[in-house]
Image (tube, rainbow, N blue to C red):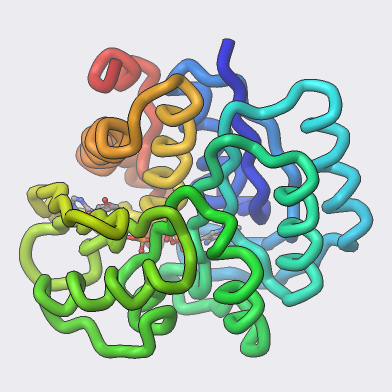
Amino acid sequence: MKTALTIAGSDSGGGAGIQADIKTFSALGVFGMSAITAITSQNTVEVRSVQLIDVNIINDQVAAVLEDIGADAVKIGMLATPDIIQTVAQCLKKYKPKHIVLDPVMISKGGHRLLEEDTMQELKSTLIPLASLVTPNIPEAEVLANMPIHNEPDMYEACRVIKKLGAQAVLIKGGHLQGNPNDLYYEGQTFQLFRGERIETKNVHGTGCTLSAAIAALLAKGKEMPTAIDEAKDYITNAIANSLNIGQGYGPTHHFYHLYECVT
Ligand SMILES: Nc1ncnc2c1ncn2[C@@H]1O[C@H](COP(=O)(O)OP(=O)(O)O)[C@@H](O)[C@H]1O
Ligand SMILES: Cc1ncc(COP(=O)(O)OP(=O)(O)O)c(N)n1
């Protein structure tokens, strides 16, 4: 049984964060474990409050898991402060997991900041260089690349800029652009565009979390990076197509166990 550890925030609404990650790991046949960095009180409409977890508790969660069980892949989500980023980076340097997928969560779909202002530089200098893959959406890529992204050609330039921050590879997700949601992968030599067809739905809460968790799970299962991204793209597309109409706002993308057959 392959294992994956998510180091991220808790979403009480169940659609994003460690809840989305664990559901995705399980749906893809990987044993999921979690180290919680923040407790968020949220639903499909809003984030009502956030309680950050003490860095010593974050460190202990990661150490407890990696010293006993280990992890074939690590997925990183919401890390709200420089101290939390430094703590997680120290753990990654100590335990050296083979695959590290970093989803640079900054703002929730409902517009709530999940990353404090002074944390961006720490993310760039301390954490991104440790990542096997960093998976920004368009707004996050604009911040990381310090440039506007209006179209796919801009995505190519932004990939080059973000790659220079030190990650082994970059995947800029195209869902926030007009037109089809194509995602662009760049590992420093060549580009690969993973094409999608837009599904008209408001139920896109947690799509980024779910995609990065699916990539981590598939890497844990031994898939090469482009294959992992390709199969994770199929997974998230199916999840969106089968998403749940629950709550008043952005519904969650549903995690079907039968999707497991779609990507194996
Ligand atoms: N309406 C949609 N239909 C199909 N795929 C989508 C849709 N919106 C986003 N995606 C895909 O879902 C994943 C998450 O993308 P995106 O929404 O851009 O990131 P985030 O959820 O982090 O904001 C990407 O693979 C993207 O191409
Ligand atoms: C605890 C927590 N982590 C991440 C998010 C981001 O989820 P969402 O707002 O749906 O954005 P994407 O996952 O689609 O990038 C969150 N809301 N809460």
